[in-house]
Every structure is written in structure tokens, then in C-alpha cells.
Amino acid sequence: MDFRKLFLCSSLLVLHFAFSSSKDTITMNQTIHDGDFLISRENNFALGFFSPGSSSFRYLGIWYHKVREQTVVWVANRDNPINGSSGVLSIDQYGNLVLRSYHSQKVPVWSTNVSVEVADTCVIAQLLDTGNLVLFHDRSKSTVWESFDHPTDTILPGMKLGLNQRTGMKLFTSDQPKRITTGLYLLGYKIYLARLSLALEKLYRYIQC
Image 1 (tube, rainbow, N blue to C red):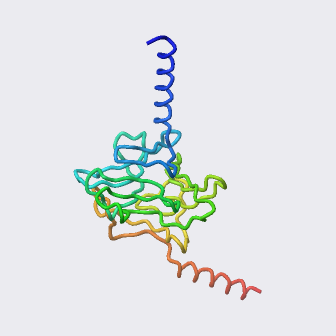
Image 2: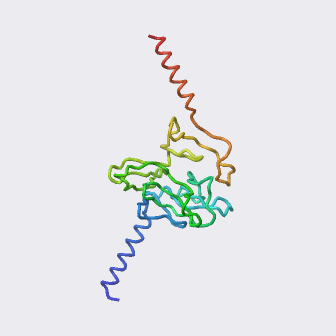
Image 3: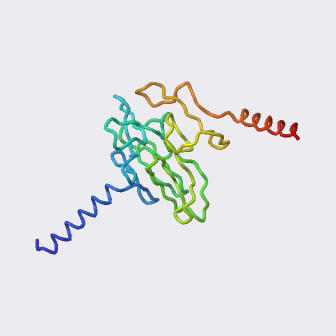
């Protein structure tokens, strides 16, 4: 092998590792298999498949990348685990993030389940350094879906827990410390309480006038 071929191979190898280590997005022609990861730009968070404790079930989640002990902050399929390492994450033709298993390709394990305009189905999913997984339009950069609007049992800096009639914005405890499934307790914001508070505020202003 002459010097030019050696230099070319070395350059391609460097570019390959540089791309692999900094991959924080997934596009419509890409997939994330069990064993693959998305790493946020500053290496703060990672997205991939994991098994809690000694469980053989697999979950798609986000955890701190720099913390030695895996600390999961968000889970997609917490109540619908995958049996074995057959999970695949992709963006379907409708612009949704979809999690499937090789054992059941027709029925998704989990999906973002949002409506994307037909004229702009070119969407990208990106894992941000805040721990937020964001699905957005490639052209307009407008957000279609984000994991911060669908928390599991953890509040991260920058996340807002409040009134959202569409998503509910509820945090459910995990069943047990070593389990991921939804527990019995929740932290949320009741819509009727917000409406009552707003009505009382309007009534108070009316009386003051």
C-alpha cells in the first residue's frame, strides 16, 4: 500500500470515528438498533436501549452519558417492553418516531403519534444536551414533538411541569426502584383547578372594579 492509499484510509477512519462519536440525530433514512446510541453534542446525554437491573426486557430511554452508574431520565416504552434485543427506532413515512420489534413489525411498540404536514414530512430527531429528544421540521426548524412534553418520572432543568391540555404533563412514579413500569403515584396539574383559579381571579377583579 503506497503513501496516498494509506493517507486516504487513515483520513476515512478518522472521519468515521468523528461522525460516530458525535451522532446526535436520526433522519428518515436512518435507524437506531439495539446497541446503537445517540449522544448529545456535548456528551451530556445518551439515547439507546437498556435493561433495568437483572431484567431481560429492553427499553428505549435517555440517561446521563457522563455518569458512571446508568441513571435513566426518560423512557419511551416503559409499559410495553421489548423481549430481547430486537428493538429498532426509526422515523416512518408520516414523520413519526416509531419503535418496533423484529418480532412484531406491523404493530409499533411505541410512537410519537403526531400529525405532520404532508408538504413537509422531512423531519429530524435530535437529542439535545438538555436531555430533550426533539422531533422537528428540517426546513422550518419548528418542533413537532419533544420528550420534555412527555416526562416519565424525572424532571430535568428546563422542563416545565404545568397546564397542557394536549399532553397532560404528568409524572408517574416507577413501580419499584429497579423497575421501569408506571407506578401508583403521579405529579400533575389538574385542569379543573387551573380553571377554578382563573375564574376566582376574574371574579376578584370584577369585585374590585
